[in-house]
Amino acid sequence: MRYIFLDIDGVLHPATAGTDRQFSPNCLRALRTIVGATGAALILSSSWQSSQAAAEVVDEELARWGLPRCSGRTSAGPTGVGAAARVGEILAWLAAKTEVEVWVALDDLPLLAHRSDGRFVQTDPAVGLTEADAARAIALLGGPTDDTPSLPPPPTEEDLAATLLSPAAKSRERRLLSASVDHTVLGGAAFSFFASPSR
Image 1 (spheres, rainbow, N blue to C red):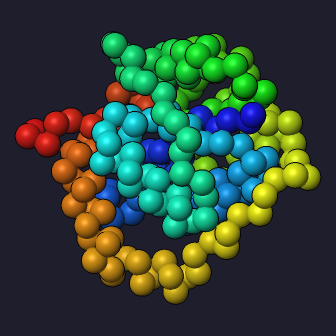
Image 2: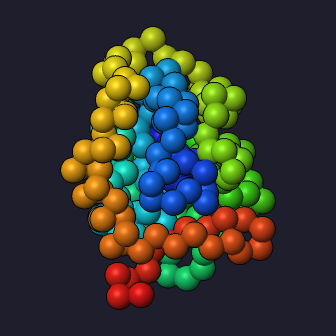
């Protein structure tokens, strides 16, 4: 089985995007390119995995783009934030699985500096995932496969525009705000983490 460890902030939208600009269409198209070519399963390896509400929003957005929902999540380590903690979470998830053929991590953090066996595509946190990043990820996953099932079509521009005004979009934004997404810059790299709603 092929796996993609998926960060959200700095990958599926710019790291500093507010709740009204999350999930960039260009970034989601690039993710569709990877999944469509490789059939890889998605594993949420982001601070978003620590909040059930946020993880549900991720799955809803993936489904809206015709992508499979995340088939798993890494577990937040007992201590630490940033690249070293993220690599530890990914390696712990991999150690618990036996069916992993190949994997890649998509993240805006410099995971290579903390041992991820060269299976890492670092995105530009100001832009997110690009088609060039997608091409690198496909190569790291062993290239395209012929037996990958077709993905449903992505949303049209009209669908995207209508979604922004829908009651569901407003509900999604309220759920994200209740999860208290906090974008903070630490050591030159952007991090997101979830605080309790009481904050």
